[in-house]
Amino acid sequence: MNPQDLDMNRRALLKTVAAAGAVGMASGLPSAVWAAGSDKPELEEVKIGFIPLTDCASIVMASVLGFDKKYGIKIIPSKEASWAGVRDKLVNGDLHMAHVLYGLIYGVQLGIGGPKKDMAVLMTLNHNGQAITLSKKLADAGAVDGPSLAKVMAKDKREYTFAQTFPTGTHAMW
Image (cartoon, rainbow, N blue to C red; front, side):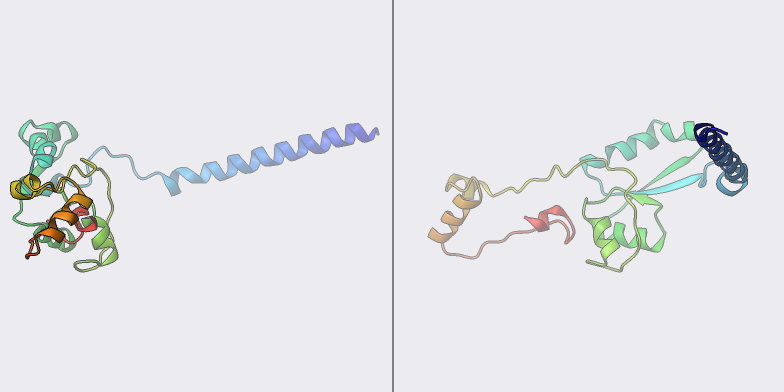
């Protein structure tokens, strides 16, 4: 027998064994990987917390316009009073999902500013459209950015008040 023929037969054998192995593994997949077919949603009512700000509009309008019905669910919007309240209701399972500050979910995941709990971000409504705003008095004094604010504060030595919305909001990072 020619060595080249032997090599070709060996290749054919390896291909056949590999194909048979793949078919054998694939035949076990349907029962192990695929769940029983159902188009029924996991939850029929989805409670979504929100703070009444402009970026909650997609949640509110999806409910008002009935977008949820197309998917066999009912969105139950839940107006919340504070970011801490939203966080606590997410952690306790009182809300299925929520409109939150960008960093709030990461804070909960890490245990910053409240109890630690595994969280997931499945959809983002916006990417931080916040801004730092100053009083008209400071703007009139020339405070239009960080360095000019520092100069105004150095000239006019007094107590200044600054605030942020929530410890894990991006406002706290500035």
